[in-house]
Length: 460
Ligand SMILES: *Cc1c(COP(=O)(O)O)cnc(C)c1O
Image 1 (cartoon, rainbow, N blue to C red):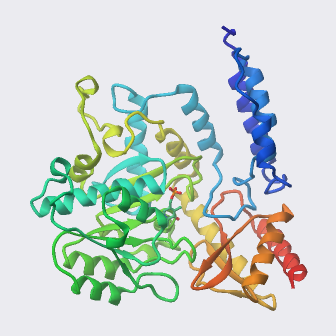
Image 2 (image 1 turned 45 degrees about the horizontal axis):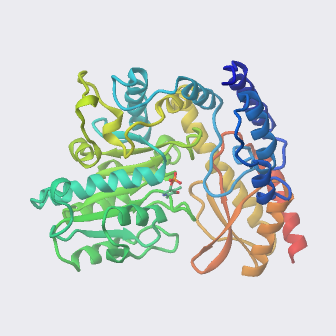
Image 3 (image 1 turned 180 degrees about the vertical axis):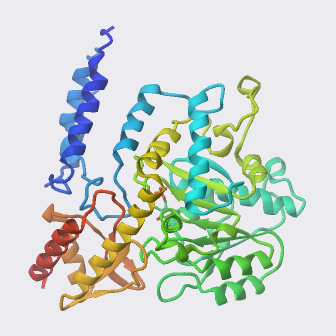
């Protein structure tokens, strides 16, 4: 056996810290990335053990060429935040402490930090203080847990115990969802035994938010009975947010459980200048949101919240004699799909502690301001059009036509100056800019606008 090497973890932490310190200046995307080269550098499995420090060195050498500076200030791809310093540090501790987070017996501190951070999250997002919450892997995990709770509750109200009896012969559940929902809603519904063909899609308006009249028509046009309605805070392309006051009232009148996928958009509620956008969202039955996007907590971290703690637990908790929680305190494992899992509460607590209420509000408001700056500065260039109403942190940009738009995106991605992706939305190819990072400044936006302008001149 090789000797325990006390320096490997320290060494890795130093490499991580050095990488983080380089985020502002390194190319945003690695130049000429070669996935096959990385595979080769990772080697073949050998017979003999290796020293931990050597392993770290080898891993760093093999992987550095394929590491994206996605936590840096000029990465605007997908919807990706960086990691706040305290949150990244807490994540290092999480690894060191290595707590099997199931309940207060298996991980006392991890269980309590979740209770505290979960309470803070509800306050910041403007959700009911009585809501249940689970610290999950991300938006996908949150949507899945929330929709499992929804399935349990709506069938329970119809006299059917889905936990015991399953879906065979169960009353039919109507699933009504916005047409521009995120793909993770479909995946969650698929896993829960609702075929995607059973989803009744509701039309959206020009900006991608649900058309509330269409929602009304769809709900009235079908049978009453167990119904789940899935709404959205933050269209993944346009950033648009559904009209919750109206949509939730309509859905509740039809007796539905209302779920809100608010992976990033729910954070509008944590900032005075954007709070009105999510007005009425607290009346929903469940909410899914991410920590690793706009809160800038390291991957992976999301939150599944519901207004029905009993349904939440009944849908996903399990019990075993050896796990029995003799302490009458909340068990983290009762609210997520995993049994043992990473202690995600530490990093969330640290992020909220670092920012405070004002810092969270400032982070959200600042990102929205930078999105408007992108829209104003790019929109002023002849030939460039902004295609969405920029109310949140997303900007959709059109460069003359589909082909030119794709060319501009490719050139920008290769520049190393900044990185943004492309999408197809409302039948147009568009550059998609998402501002979520705590490190981004107005100067980073200007530098990125210059890089985009330059790419556009070359692409024409
Ligand atoms: C990102 C996103 C998701 C999925 O979240 P993950 O953290 O990637 O699992 C779901 N819904 C919306 C609206 C999103 O933006």
